[in-house]
Image (cartoon, rainbow, N blue to C red):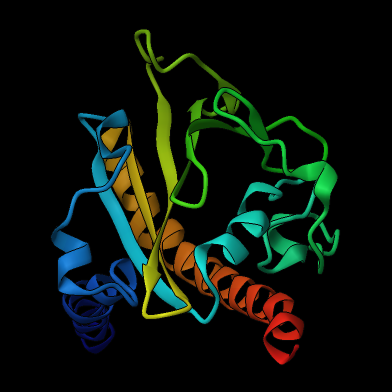
Length: 222
């Protein structure tokens, strides 16, 4: 029993010191980690949960249409569809009818529409910030401009694009959040949300890279 306890302590310490910091900054440069981005101020008392990044071999104009058509009732999220889209496959082409996203709109988190993201900021080909403000434990939406409920989760999922090289895009995704009760929220992040976010976000990175680069290939070949 003492050996098992010691092993658990070593495992937790290793995860906290070595693994967790890498998950929260996966792919991001030192400058991106230190830098401020448009929309960071939306949750002034929030904390940066993660800053992750990837480079896509396609310009922002080719990446942007895939972002604005995301949604449970639209293109999906290009990640593990069975986990985040209830099995509906993510789109493999650009849909013109789904390109009309605007600030103040909604992006459904699931196909049935019971949970959604509010579009908090939108700058074409530069920034898309989705915000989720939910009371707990019933996951009912509340207005973040007013007093929050006793127990809540309020977070942003921000997509920032910038040119990289001659024809590429640097995509930085930053998550900022606040919530109550704090200790329970931190425990949930450690045990579940941070590892799950890392898995899903990396899958989305791969899905976006594959789609954006493939959609540009015919133009390059021509």
